[in-house]
Image 1 (cartoon, rainbow, N blue to C red):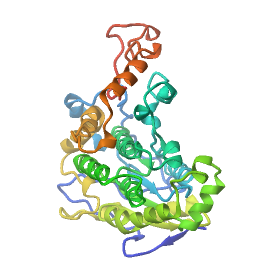
Image 2 (cartoon, rainbow, N blue to C red):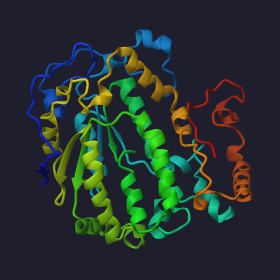
Image 3 (cartoon, one colour):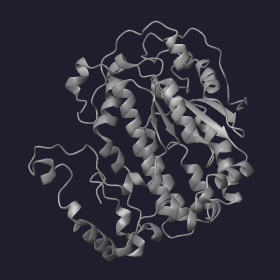
Image 4 (cartoon, rainbow, N blue to C red):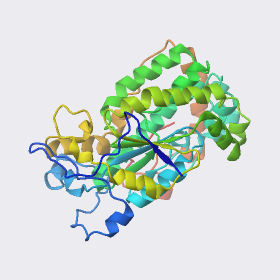
Length: 398
């Protein structure tokens, strides 16, 4: 059974009456699990979820559609962290189901390579120049010293960043909490582990942190981080047990790499994120029960942090309803703007630069494919090539 590790940065706070500052709009009380919710009277009705996928949240809408009116105890961002093969996916899915939250599986390179028209860009690899081919976690595990490894990690950060925006948009438009596996805040642990093993250069590391500094402050940090702890030797056993050839037979997940990941998690990420979020760390060597974790979560009082200068939950203490509307509008309507913040002109790192002729050859081959003849939403299969159909708000084109 999992053991809750109590340290100076891990606290289970007894439930107590929440205090709400008079000039601050904060969220409600503590998170409640399924068993607790079922023992209470039905909650008062809330506005229906807003269709943020197909509609913009405009200033006019904000006058009548108040963001905080959909919030309840479980309108929270929960992030599940841990080493490779710790069992995060199964745990996060079960936790989300118990808490009535939306589960976001860990972001991966499918976000970049699987296009909205159903085409996987990896199918073109055999016909395009090597430096323009796709490179995902399978490739990285097999060839961690590849020229594209640095670009892969930067694209992984972008994938986590984009997914986190989607999670914030979901929470602010529906009131439903979200459970994510890893986040852009913890992505650097992979970068540092890669750098320690010389999989990437100093130049790549420099570009990564410049991009991170340019983008990360526009997000709202999580309310709760849950870390599933496994010693490195148990991580190696778990990697072998799940029988992915590219992991167990690959060259990336070595003992030094996994040890550096653990060090970055425990000495850097967990200490930093605990200044804002609540943190629970569990010894997950023998697995654990979701119900036990839920009971620990229910003891946390997220509303006790009300002072203006208090760093805990600071991102979620907005003084006025209009500020909630601004954040909601940003994540709902302007994902393209936030993703464009990654366009930093760095030309001093050769492994991040694609030869112009190679890039042209790749783009031409893909664009000539029949599936890319029409922009999404405008092909004959959609019934119109005119303006009948609306383009998605954010599409990463080839």
